[in-house]
Length: 317
Image (cartoon, rainbow, N blue to C red):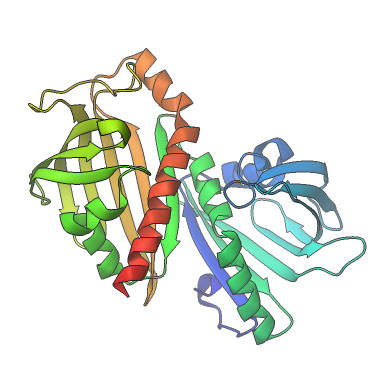
């Protein structure tokens, strides 16, 4: 999507995100090195900032630590900075090499939310295509997903990802149990439905089977199904008789969780998935603390499921 409907140029890459936070909060997350460390870079990467001076003529020097142990040194040169509104900077260069591309980012607040429009300008259309491939391979888009997750309220867990499939296909794999069971379970587990009715007011009773004969039962109640954009359901662990139980590996985990899945079209064959997970019902302080401390594990778990989903979608093409 071209930023704010400006003409599309073949040597440019466009990105738009809506963040559920006021523009000052988003701006601070971009310009405070302590905050930047929590979200900048693809999933699995860590960041060390050596210096950060966000002003016209200023620069940011940093190291990206890859999950493979390789360090990537970077330097950003700020060409224009308008506080809470706009940045223009050269990205990816260093003292001994030219920048990879020029980035223009504009921030606009409306009703307490912030729209971020980003344009990455490269020297040629061919360079733009190669950069798109590189960003996809490196998981670069997850940087902006991680920002949304970082900005989420304390008692919410949010994770985002975009997939190269039409919106209708994505809705189908979330609501057709024969598809759903193929990718959602954790690694090493399989999922089977004992009873399932995926519709507003419907419910399901399922079993996940894992290593060593382990079995975990669960119940889902569908509060809202709005094709093809929104799915809302509650979920609880239970025993084989459908009596609600605690998490088998976390006795203080909340009994009931609320999941909201939002699907949005990013193009004719690209869909963005946003999953919001939150405690539901009369959970106590200990349960909420357990939930909030487990967000790292949730990210790892959902990332694994999304990886499986991406692979599964590849078999449907």
